[in-house]
Image (cartoon, rainbow, N blue to C red; front, side):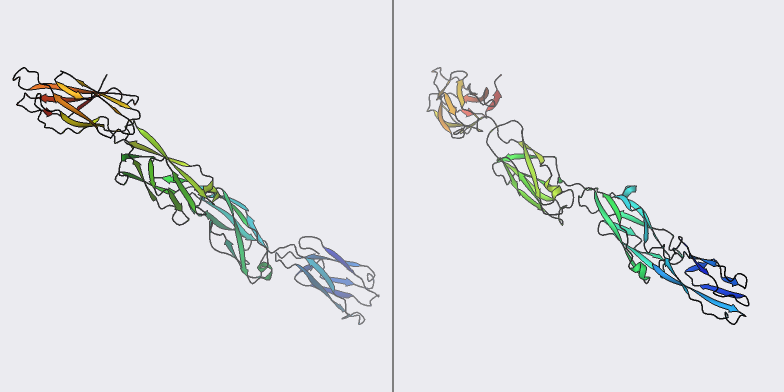
Amino acid sequence: VEEAGATAIYSVVLQSQPVAQVAIDIMADSAVTTSQNRLLFDSLNWQMVQTVTVTAIDDRIFEGIQESIIRHTVQSTDPNYDNTTVADVVATVRDDDKAGLTVRPSELNVSEEPNLLSSTAAYSIALKSLPTADVIVQPVSGDQLHTEPAALTFTSVNWNIPQNVVVTAIDDAVAEGESTAFIAHEIVTQDPHYADAATPDVAVHIADNDMPGVIISQQEITVTESADIRSATESYSVSLASQPMDLVTVTIAAASAFTVNPSVLYFDSMDWKVPQLVSVSVKDDDVVSDRQVGKLLHTVSSNDARYADLSPVELTVDVIDNDVLGLSYTITPPLTLTEGGAPLAYQLSLESRPTADVTVTAVISNGRLTLTPATFVFTPADWNTPQAGTIGAMDDQQGNEGTQFDQIHFTMASADPHYNGLQQDLDVVILDSAGARTVYLPVIRKLR
């Protein structure tokens, strides 16, 4: 027979005609029931077969296949039948119950983002059959999930009442993308069938809120050129956007004009969010230039696949030029110059390196001065090498004229657009033969 299933029939008949009524009592154990508890035979129906239907009791307890014994006792005033031994009937009972857990649903979706409703989800657990002892179910969720409560207890009273388990994704700061974790279940019980029962897992699909990336503290930095790169530096910091699974190396590449220290940064799972300081300086190139913009390229390498696939990250560097246009003189005012006296020796050079040869021509306003030479040529190689010249005041033989004024115009021509057309004027005061000469600070202007 089967619980909640097939029944079985057996028959009983007397072997001889009794002289009195014969009563056969049927006694079944707790596993089955019989359609009749007593059969009556007499001298008229003793040859008629009487049937007994056997039905298994669905007790909701998992017992596997078991045998049920149906016993018979005989009572009669016929001495030949009274207390006659009747063979037992053995019924094989097939159980329809199973020891196990009913888990619904078998899949969940959660997010690591703590502020979203989707950060938690729930499923329920109940037993499939009545246990013979308390059953404790413990969810085992690993390090990506948190489950509450830690254990569920099922008894013979509440075994089929679903109990909820709340699942929360742990925000672990690791960029994993969408991943799937599994919740297993352990059973603690004295019921041998449940102690050995298989338990289903719950699949939990986790939406990650972390992204791999390189975080640079500034979008742009400004650095001033300096002959001493230690005296003009700018700093920024670098960190990672998520915890890596392996060592991450960030290599910083820059043009040769830049000095970057350090040029290689290392991050691991412990210090990934600690900003590392990078200093940047630009060596003075001595060349006057318009606004210069450079790029620092941050390239990532790692055995962590998500970081290995990152594109390089750029940082813009705005360079401030410290170079100026113009001429540099060795003349130190005040100077005494007498008409007709000895010429004054001086030296001339450029203030900054040109990108092409620069021809400097000295032009006198009033013709009272003598200049030797009248033309100087500076190249990108010797721009700061002083070239010698002389300035003299001619005696005009006009007697005592008092203080006279003159001006030297140094005009520049070059394929360098910054120097081409530049004019620097030198104002000169000439005293008579008894006076002195004073040279004022130069005035620079661009010829139009």
